[in-house]
Length: 150
Image 1 (tube, rainbow, N blue to C red):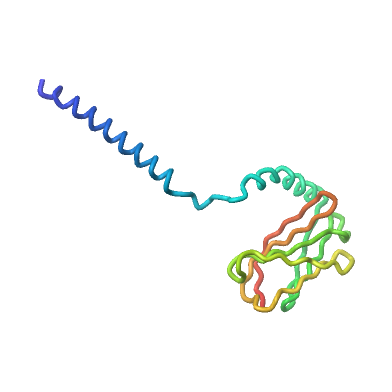
Image 2: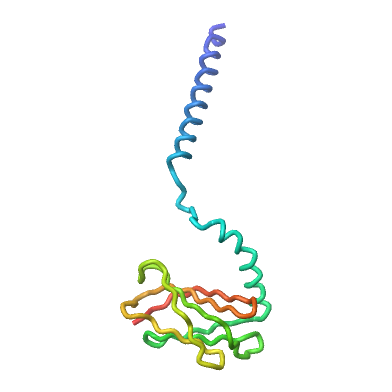
């Protein structure tokens, strides 16, 4: 019979533990923020389907980007599945990461025959992560690269 006397205390301790854990959870939810928060989440969510369609269009066209780095000059040859030059695309190069402060966009200049050029600004050197983007007629190609710039 002495074991039955401890059961009410066990139930009270479980209730107190549950209440304390719930209070701690509410506190953490109110005070702490996630590091994965996107300040512009709504517009990114709206653009998700459009971006997905653009990528599928580029994949169906078989777009291929062949970058070549020479000093501070980057040339990118853009071709389709039949190895034909893709002309008339709008290209951008985005500098990411440690070599720059924040992100910085550079335009890619088309020189003809599907070749697009960019020159890195002074002060950019070492390992530099970049993203290249090409858009034309509802198709979009994105590529991320890590370049070693002299």
